[in-house]
Amino acid sequence: MNFFRKLIGHLKTVFRHKKEVAKICFKFGLYWQGIIHDLSKFSPTEFIPSVKYFQGNRSPIEAEKEEKGYSMAWLHHKSRNKHHFWFWVDWNSKQCQYPVRMPLKYVYEMIADTVAAGKVYSKNAGKEWKQSDPYEYYKAHNRDAENGIEFMEFCTKAVLDNIYVDIKEYGLDKVAKMIKCGHYKKFYNNIKTENGKEILEWLPEYNNLVSKYYMEKNNEN
Image (cartoon, rainbow, N blue to C red; front, side, top):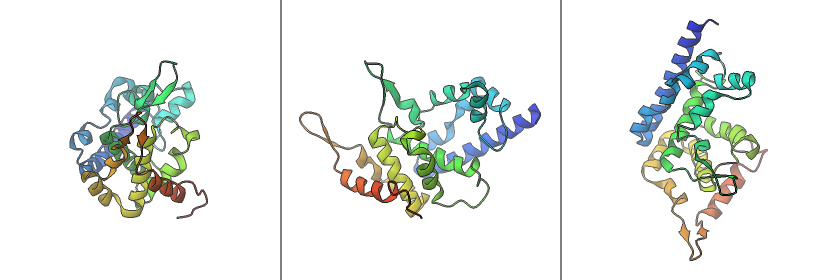
């Protein structure tokens, strides 16, 4: 594939993705985030290697990693876009990594990003989208610690777990209404004891959800 075809192919893919993200963000009431989502992809650090490694059927980031052992485009991207949970990983005084709780508006943008990516980048791209698709992808590829989500703060992960289940059960439009009415804020509104320890009132309900949807590996939908 020559450079010009790669350039056109990459631009089409990026704009399709941005359009899908914007549509979902607008449903969630995140108008500005929907507009500025992933603008760093047009920076030279991300744009040039993404065109160079564009293949049309997989992420150019993965192709760059295979050749170089790392992706400069990805290192640049995740450090400038707050809807990626890797942005919210810090270092403590002992130089150990630890996750920081993501603001909810970026959790919602992450959901929009994931759903849109499934419509644009996945093997089922262009086919009929099912409301169970985001949940299935999240459960299979992102939730397990061995697949890279070990650095996500607990309450952030709890919100994601619930939203993906809710999309599966009720659909994206219903979740958008739940977001707008503040339904998921309960995960961040915790009661603290005198010694500062968090009391998570929603924990029993959450444990039941995790047991039902995520921990039963043979649970077929």
